Length: 198
Image (cartoon, rainbow, N blue to C red):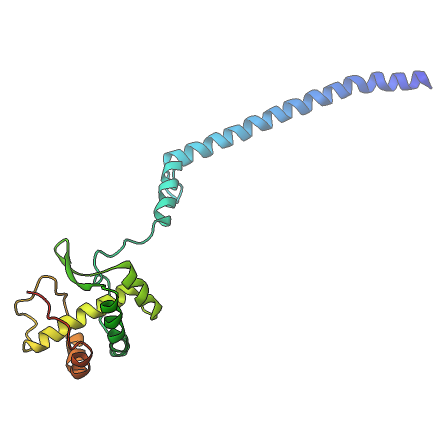
């Protein structure tokens, strides 16, 4: 029996050695193929071939550009839609309270020039107060500036092409019509507002 086991070991020993060598060579060949595939993939990514495949830098730049916030408008008026009737009525409800608050807290909010463009200046404290009233501060002060401009145009005889102060924003025909329609209410809530400086 021992001889039989020795003979089996003797026969399988070289076979085991051959099998191990074969497996090692196969693994080595597979590794070479895998490395060649990785090299081709890396070259493809680095070359920026078409088909939405980019280099690492291009992918990082594309990823970074997607993460960047949209460009902030340079003025409160930029990229703002025209004032609506409903919005004006809501604004006119809040305006007297804002004016009282601003006066009591020595806050200023007024038209200004920003890089040669009409804008509206207000403090972070004023912005916070407006937000507490349910308004987006940029929109609130956009409505304030546009409707003050529309009111000035109506008071000057509806001449939209006349000489305007540089800090006075553009006003649409629709906003001018709103100012005419709500003229009494606008004058009442803005009674002691000084005119836009010329």
